[in-house]
Image (cartoon, rainbow, N blue to C red; front, side):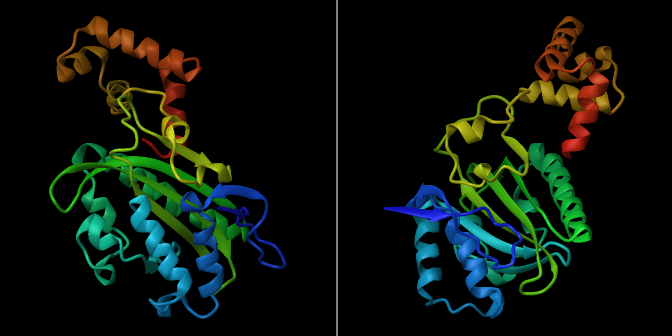
Length: 272
């Protein structure tokens, strides 16, 4: 079965469906339909037996996902799907705005925190300019309720709206991609306005933004922290020649002129 949906845009009719076709079980239009259907009446009071919510819950289980809607300006979760119990071992009513950061593995926590801070900053920009949308998509590693390491994709659709009241909201979809695709080097990251990144993950999506290996990104972090090549070599138990080679590869991969520009670009993205 094929459904149609549109980019969420601020328009007079508030219509959010148009001409992008996606297989039903991969169809993110349901999230927009949910927001549009229930925002006027109050998302907090959604009837668990409503057919749209029942269908969403079915899709979440099928796709190993959960989703939630947040007023980002107020840092208030308006709705979260019941799948959070299965994926994170916590009841929906107990989830706070900062909960998911606490589940992230230590090696990925700094990046998760920086991207979260960038998300809040963008939400404030959209609120001030009274319009616009953004997509932020990345993966981080976490522990599931059974204590197993899992790889989770966070896909955030940020938008300004006057319904149900004036604020910047986000629809955030979390997908367990542990068994979908092994990202051997680096991590997926996208930040921009391309709605195509707000879709069920495939290999092309997951590999986008995957420029630097984990070692290379770690070296970028250490350079930004002020360490010399000799100090980085000692910290990472590598030779100075190896670190120098990594630095050269980092610049070559980035297409920039020097490591200072690389660091500046990563800061703009919110990754440093």
